[in-house]
Length: 335
Image (tube, rainbow, N blue to C red; front, side):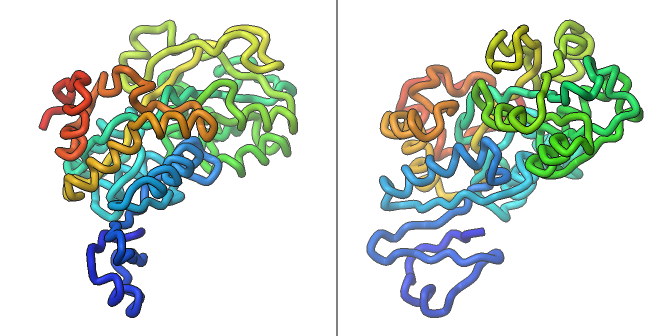
């Protein structure tokens, strides 16, 4: 982790000063504060989104310098930002309320988390199985090995929640490994399939995996058409993957999705958070991301960026959003 260090750059360079297990060095001329931003695995949407975003910020800010940090995903990010180990991160609307309230998988309430604003559009769940697996529905997963996702990822938690709602959690051999390893296991026919939340349609990971082994995407209507089951999963929303999104998917597929936010530790200086949010949500960033990562959720492309706000805004972020004139709702989980 890059720690926050201001001034004394020459001394920091000379001593190789390390804070929190990593070195944060400040450029004397620009007095930048360096931060790591907790993302996900190198192939995840989080990492692929924030890498070009960090490049843009680093070119355009004299105040902060950012480095994408590879992690196990949203759950780990909430733990580390809430604990102050990392100052910035990315977190889904599945993990955020659980982290705030200290619900599983979080052993205690992480009330030092603040919101900065949205980072992505919809994270669309894909429950993918090999076409030759004999699996045509979730019920067919009973007695088989299925990759729910990477440990600590929201995809894994959503997958387990779906299996729980369907009474299958004790009947399926749930495998938790990094997504790339799960993809290899699917193509090697070690498991029948895997789930992953992906940004943007069509999703590149699904397209690539299908070149190795023919796939089908399971329809989630058994959840989306059941109001009682959906009520037990309040952090997800239903959507349809349109027919023909993939060459190998001729029919529309009902599935679920979650949203995602930038989060920040409450103790980060207001000016640094303001700078971060200002640049992330600039027209220059939107233009930059049109070629780098189109499936972002940044303002001004996202016209209602704070809809569904869960936890309080960081004061530095609130200062920016007030300047834009966008509506700032009361956080659903209070102060």
